[in-house]
Structures are given as structure tokens and as C-alpha cells.
Length: 111
Length: 116
Image 1 (cartoon, each protein chain N blue to C red):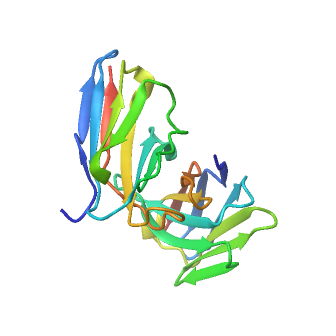
Image 2: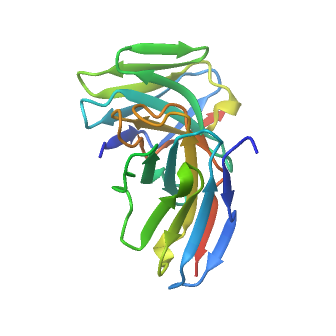
């Protein structure tokens, strides 16, 4: 199945700074790339996703970029706030197959 | 209920016993996943039910693990002869899409399994 690598595993930024999380995938035919946020003690929730026919997608302070040639995609969070502190998971899917997640990035935003 | 429901929320068992974990997806959702999350770890894929197609069982870690989905709705994950390394939170998720791209997954609260 699809193999997703995620970096870094932990990330600490100061409030107001930007945070970037990067993921790579193994199957060049994968065509769906969501990002999930899991706050402490809660269930993962979708925050943004992108399909392979799009290079970038933005939703307020978060954006995702996709480089199909290099098989990597990134999550960008600008103007970080303490409530952004959580574990973020990237995932990749080839249509018709299972959605596979990376191992997660624990983001800490300090005031 | 409006969300994905899982039971039990907590299960403590002795090594060697069998356990069953239940997932009740959102009504009308065709896709159903089981993931395992160990302490501080990622979301490990276990099994994927996609509409009426044969399930993708490629993530099941051993033949002690099995799952079924009856009538396209409720799913049961069974772990036989539990081992201590099976201790984890087992998360179920469903989505409205049955084939192709999964789309947004809605997760349950999880079943926390502790094997003594």
C-alpha cells in the first residue's frame, strides 16, 4: 500500500510565527491528500485536503501545496495561535485503495 | 446518533483472551475504516470496507485480527488471543463515499484496549 513519511515529528513555534509540515508519498498515482488535526484527547478531524489536479489550496491561515513530480506535499500554517497546538496527520490515497496516514507531527505554539 | 459510535470505550482484558470491538458508522456512509493508534503514535491502517467491494485487509498485523461488516452498516473488529502489544486505541471512521476517493473521514471516539 501507499507509504507516507511525515516530518518533523515535533515542531515548536512562537505564537504568530509560521509552521510548515512536510510529507512524502511513494505511489505516484496517488491523487488525494488530506490533513487531519487531532487535539489532545479528541478524535482526528479534517482541516484541509487537496486533489492531484491542484497545486495549492488555501483556507484562511492554512494552506497545502502539492508537488506531484517530487511526490511531496506540505501544510503551511501562518500566524500561529496557541489553539493550533495539536498533532497533525497527513495522508495519501490512490483512488479505490485505502487512505494511509503519516506518523503525525506534534505542533506546540507557545505564547 | 449523528456521529460514529464505538463500543466499548474502554476494555481491559487478560493476555490470551479474545475481544470484540464494535463500530456503528454514520447512517448512509458507505466507506468504513479501522485504524490503530498506540500511545503517541500515528494512525496505523488496519482494514477498509468500501461499499459492496471486498474489504482491503492489507493492514491487519496478524491472522489474530479479523473484521466484518454486516449489512453494509455495523462493523466488528475481533482480536483473538490478545497480546500486550495489542494495547492501543482502536479508531473507526466512516465516509459517505463508497468507491474511489474516500473524502472526509468522520472518526469515532475510539475503543481503548488494555491487555494485561
